[in-house]
Length: 427
Image (cartoon, rainbow, N blue to C red; front, side, top):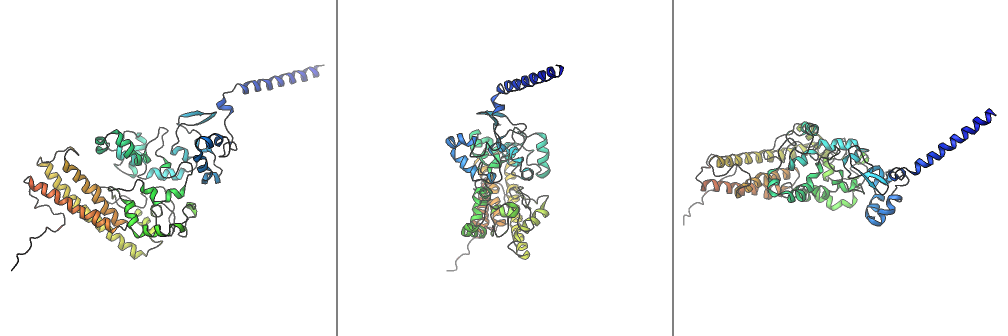
């Protein structure tokens, strides 16, 4: 009898626990009970059942992405990471806004490389200065790019106003924007959101969506160069979506931006630090060698070695660096005359408050940069007509402005020959 009672009590208790479990489960919040499984959230599953009606293009893009080939589902990317605001979305918990932190789950090395580059924090700081970054973020970036983040906001952006800055400047510079979750940047600036396309990121036009125009005309220079013409002619033969770890010159037999600056061909490893193979600060008014000058130049020459002899590459660098040094001398002389105008009260110390200030800015920011970039990127026309011709033009403008204000320019030599009066005719 005692044995029967024990069994009976055990059955009753077990039954009670089962009923209680069902009761508790039935009353759990939907956000818990309706979380999808990996199978459920495939692009053909629950997420797509709505999004194929509401935003069908993103479903198609995801279905054609390398993420699908690797078994990555919607929630793998949209699941909230530490520090991200959670959004309850039709029974799911997803991140309110995706950042590079979501991508870090799988691409940690690429993210670390990216944050070492000028695409990281320096890009945003070039517009807004250091105010949006934590001390830790500033300290890390300054190790690689001294003065690029610990700096004041851009004065021109302030003068142009918030609307122009947000829609204009930030359209490119947000690639390095600090996020609320502690990460920096948006990978989708170069990779499309749902297609996650390496082919898209390797297209020169993708880089050129920011690296174009008079202040950094890399896309225009590339199109003029022999490299750009070869790519334009034979691009249909390129395998632009090959895995970076398997990329060879068979896939990309002529340079794109990514080939030289990022791709792993020959003895090089792929990198997301786009500054890793650079040797000069070409964007500066007066360019100096980077702290990693020797390593950067050696790495870029390694990329050149896929097509060119060592002698050819060395001679090319000698010519490019000669243009950099000559441009530096012109800018230094020009700016010393500018300082003389300030000292004499012809120009104020305030930036962009006089018409001549814009010509001064254009001298180095447009034409000096263009000449230097053209020299390194095989853009002869940009060294000459878009570069040195305008440097001469703007030097004459400044010289004449100084003369009109009674300031002697005899001591300033910018490296151009002064025009000589025509000889008198003997007839």
